Length: 161
Image (cartoon, rainbow, N blue to C red):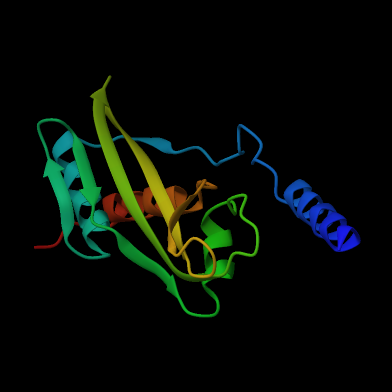
């Protein structure tokens, strides 16, 4: 009986060592960009890009902030692979992921004839094996870069009449 307890303890220690705390300072892509356009034009472009994934949670033009509602990144068997494109896996043992979602916050700040836009994504996965809850994944900056690129493309497109 003692051998079984020691074996289980050794296994637990091994697994704990394999999934220790995540290192500080995950590398991420830059999350902001300057656009040489008026605040109103940039606001309209950010609003359009942010609205692509559904209704917005909030949009405050005077404060320069737009927040999306949580939107689906993935569902089903490939959820973990999709989440890994956008974020670093959290330190969890025996996790299985059934859903992925994101909320993106855009902060706009005009300065010196340009408008700076910062995109911040909060990415989470639903762990459906042990925790049975939404768990945050540290962002890689990929989703933010995609949004910033789409804003640049919207600003470069000819105005609709």
